[in-house]
Image 1 (tube, one colour):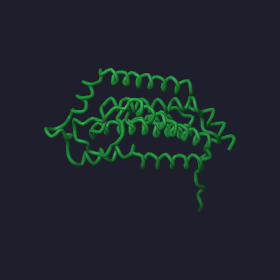
Image 2 (image 1 turned 60 degrees about the vertical axis):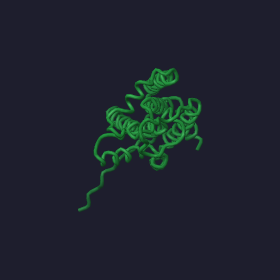
Image 3 (image 1 turned 135 degrees about the horizontal axis):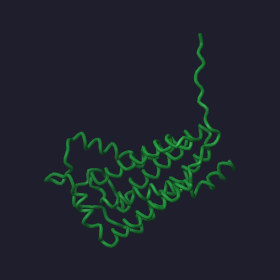
Image 4 (image 1 turned 90 degrees about the vertical axis):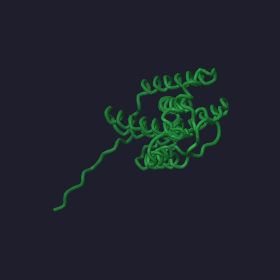
Length: 232
């Protein structure tokens, strides 16, 4: 006897993330980013940065804990690196196109590309040096503020979550997918301080900026993405 397989019916077009919620959330994140940037520029963040960077370290200023924890932290930070981040991003675009969600694929690509440009511009304008008071446990170059790992991983993974959350009309499903991306991006941001290559305010600002950009782009770039997808 042959049993018919279950059929999954996907929407012809993804459900739109509510811009009335995404836009205020994005603006709130960028307000937090501006506050952190002000604190850094005026020197008000110096004490917090030093205490945060020196927290939970031994006499050699290396992070306390077993060796396996260091390897685990390096694995997590790798998720925000250029190679893995871009591989996951390309895989997401391919999956969205395979599902015939052209609008979501274009919106995701626009969000990631524009977010990278914004982060690079801010890094150049601020020009903050990386911390040198603790050992660097991974390779890192360029300016320190905001953390590129934190900004770009938040922008990529949260924008990815927003794209795939659009497959469901159920709020619980959307919140779960987006919440998972928030947790992953926060974990990546924390590893940069633990590995000694960023000040705490670098990663706070980077995460707020990347998160804010993902939500802002969801609202602001929706129409250009829709027009590009429809034209294609």
